[in-house]
Length: 90
Image (tube, rainbow, N blue to C red):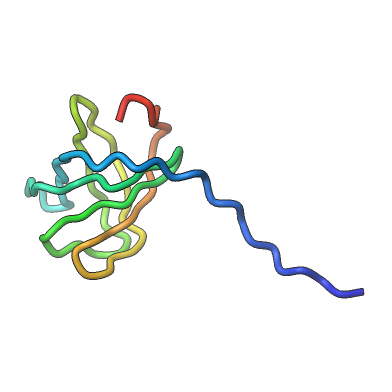
């Protein structure tokens, strides 16, 4: 019997391309662009240095959402929301 590696299913991503404000762990606000979003995560473009594991807050439109940075690659970063979000309102 052979085993098939289990690959967790990733939630569908929605392309949003909208301005956002990122508040880093030092409380510094930086401009960002939310590139895409899913029910539990996001990808954004930001030109400031972010760190994997860093706790941040994202302000998109009138919503302020706590999140954790999971990866950083160049001027893009991805993370997970620490609270449930309604992807239709972000």
